[in-house]
Length: 102
Image 1 (cartoon, rainbow, N blue to C red):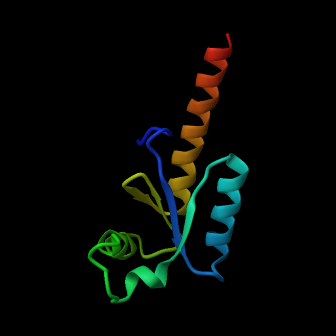
Image 2 (image 1 turned 90 degrees about the horizontal axis):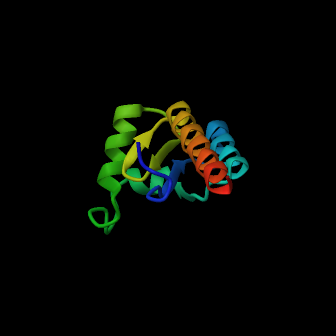
């Protein structure tokens, strides 16, 4: 798993996707910063597709065949996998804070 200090969270989905909206709300509630991206912009051919990591997003979308796709660092997850990983990261963050407070 990616440590929280290394984690850059990116959410790829669509505007009217209920799970996408829920994922972003949960990320905010959990205190994680993220960037929001329109999945269609990365899964259709466009100028600069080699430079903007579209190939990784297309591969994740083909593998998961669901939305949202959530990247934590370089690892991609479906909704439930990302929430599980982020809950673990939050738990580790809280434990580290309580150890440093002691």
